[in-house]
Image 1 (cartoon, rainbow, N blue to C red):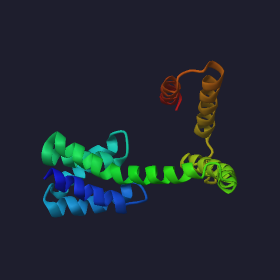
Image 2 (cartoon, helix red, strand yellow):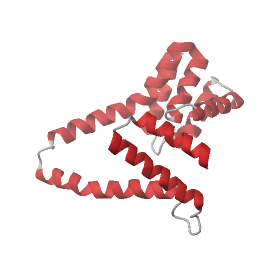
Image 3 (spheres, one colour):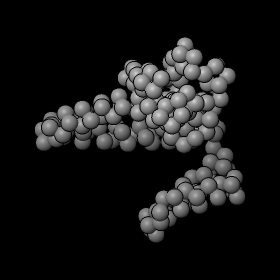
Image 4 (cartoon, rainbow, N blue to C red):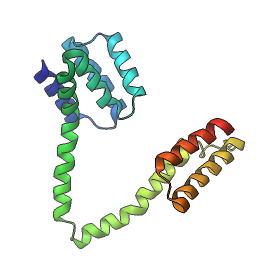
Length: 176
């Protein structure tokens, strides 16, 4: 049973891409076909996994493993889904480490910095709703004010990020 959990989620981990939500249907198909959970139980596990911090796919398979075979099942399922990504990252790191002094590779990574920065800024604007016409309200302005205040607290007073996050959450609750 434990080996089946590990092997099933190891295979899913190797062929999955696109984030946790994209592999949920594949996980569901395997879990139901193995008889580890019913559809209703699976939906409850995914709902609980979505509420927990961390990647939903990892949380879901850990719950499935626990429900199926206890703590050993949870460990086997979690290691199975995470290990393929870890192996790929280690192999790519070894490859790039050997090329770290290569002039072309340095130039490539230097050129990627502004692209990655732009993508992060775009994602922040998109998820913040700032890319839609007419989406600017008083809450938009106050949200930006909270953001500016957080940056000021981080850089000026060197506060711990968790303290700043808690303060931002409290400001949002109180004023928004």
